[in-house]
Length: 178
Image (cartoon, rainbow, N blue to C red; front, side, top):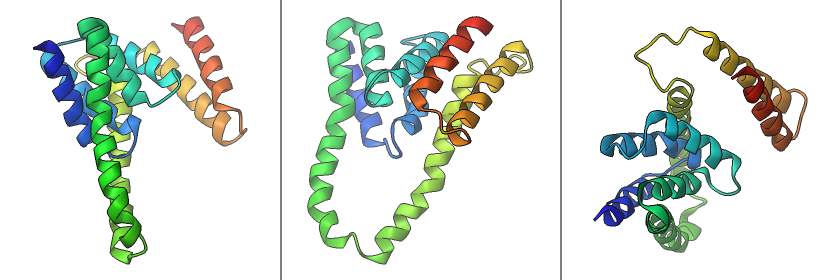
């Protein structure tokens, strides 16, 4: 029953996953919280590990949550659940999109989805950065998190440092500061 539930939950997330893996993190967090499968702290660790691993963060997070919840069968159920909708949608959409992709209304609708995707990413960032919003967010860990995040952002945007180097340096800074 748990495997079926994992499959169905991640299939629902897969059907609603617009904007890439980071936009889906908030949906995964909501669903996982509803069932109490993992703690908020463990969810933070899973997202961090999923983000550093090769591949889609959503698929990696689904796999790790499934693994934590029901072992290897849970990981497989979660992966199949989150990827199957994309496969179905892409096969069906590719058939029709090729014919209509130059129409202005199609282009405008895609532009209209951008603000929603940005909002989902900001929501995920807030909940990852501050998992317990009931206590004060003004403490030394918040300051350290913002400093690491700001330095990482500046390194990539201004100084064109390779993202893998920034990830490694950020991990080292986290070890030192936390």
